[in-house]
Image 1 (tube, rainbow, N blue to C red):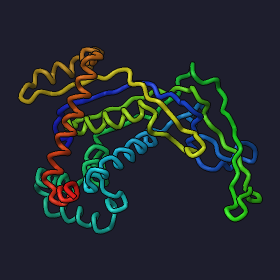
Image 2 (spheres, rainbow, N blue to C red; image 1 turned 90 degrees about the vertical axis):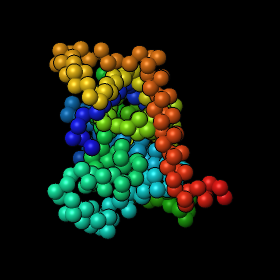
Image 3 (cartoon, one colour; image 1 turned 30 degrees about the horizontal axis):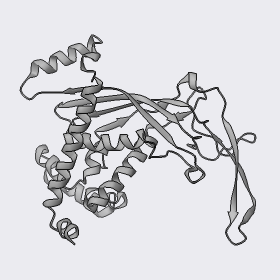
Length: 289
């Protein structure tokens, strides 16, 4: 999957907290301070782990794909089951001298969502860096809020269950950067749909979402796209040379190109899913009924 370079898409932008954000670092062991602090970097500034963003994105896309066909996004618990892991081990043993055939077999057994986001046996094509705070948008302090566990029998506050937690204030911005390599057009379409959910405030992050916390908005600022034409090594050499010289903006998409790519990739996803539905007798029966 990664033995030959095919393409690269780099995306940057800003993620803004519309409401307060709580991504907890776990219960604090400090004698003084909040019970549930947020995740911070080495300088004590708020941080959104790339894994938190990626996990929320994957979860939303899984729900979409399962709504079309459950085989498109399998249950993660099933993907890591002992039976599945043993099957992967058997495949590796059977094809240990034929890497191409092993890769083909692994892709065949992998659901669509895992082809982009990765699985225990296939590396992810999509990486998100930890989102660091934009200094000018954060005033250097956290908000602290109180919480309490409710006794379900009396519907009142449970004894000894009062706690407090930190949140990052609304209006704080974080730097967003993601990279996708060797993705198929339909996989890029899937990613565009997921990012659009963040652009329209449809995917919350962190804890306390039932309290209204975690509403965020993504603003994609720039996209760099390089698609390596087959049998044209001179273009890859030119690309590598430009990267070394710091001329990456040669591959910067204009607003018109960005919209065109989004439309083309999204249409590729629709075509791909439609084709797979038609080739799945079970799904066709369900759709007709």
